[in-house]
Amino acid sequence: EPEVTQTPSHQVTQMGQEVILRCVPISNHLYFYWYRQILGQKVEFLVSFYNNEISEKSEIFDDQFSVERPDGSNFTLKIRSTKLEDSAMYFCASSEDWETQYFGPGTRLLVL
Amino acid sequence: RKEVEQDPGPFNVPEGATVAFNCTYSNSASQSFFWYRQDCRKEPKLLMSVYSSGNEDGRFTAQLNRASQYISLLIRDSKLSDSATYLCVVNPPNQGGKLIFGQGTELSVKP
Image: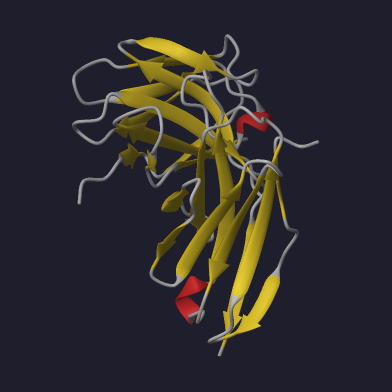
């Protein structure tokens, strides 16, 4: 069964550093998403992406965040200058349509 | 009112029990609803979509009441492997596929 994959599984970084989280969505999916989950809190939407542009973004997704589909398979989330409060689990998801989304295993980001 | 609100947990039940989770949502224009399950520190996994007429998948039954903006999930004959957090999820219209998650209800099934 096809799956969304994410790398790395864990990332530790210093405050102020840039990080890039990588995702390989399911191959025939056209819609891509990033969510995050701070420990003990609910899953929160960050951004959706379709046809090489952002479709929707949340208030969390400020100028420090960007997304890119650099080639036909990868989908990346970049955080330009990490803050302590960016520490969270980041999930990538993909879907064939705007509805049923399948999630990757996540990247656990720790900002020190 | 919170966008998606769920029963507080945790629910501790014996194996074989029937357990029900409830959820309410605030956006009456929402059209798509889901239940996901999340194991500790893992990704949300789709359990089932929720259809207007109600739907069943094995031991799991989901119901939707649009008038009350209420969604439910019933688990019959619960197994130890059902222990997880159950997430009520709503996809509001015209928001680029954004999913709104509830806080989740933790279920612990004991032998």
